[in-house]
Image (cartoon, rainbow, N blue to C red):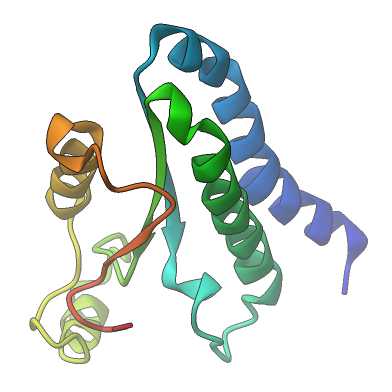
Length: 144
């Protein structure tokens, strides 16, 4: 496996989460309120024969970080959760999207609105008692 490829995935999938969280976390803790929401994918839960091992490793690392961070900052009024996305409508090929949609239990692929609604919920006061969790936003493709 190409070491440069490994570094790219680690930089994007893990270091990005670490740096973005680090940029805002102290202020959230001082303020006594904050919501850290990380976007991940089902590649951290399910092995797929698509050459995604490095991608899945990066996503798994980010999820592990969020789970532990959630415990560390819970006393400060900060929650940390993950959205694990399923197949999204970003392929561009309508025929392929229709084929993929047929494999999803709800009969369609995910949209930005689906992800946005989950983010709004996790950022709201209604989610104050939810922390350290990974929420599958995947149309039922991967259940736990």
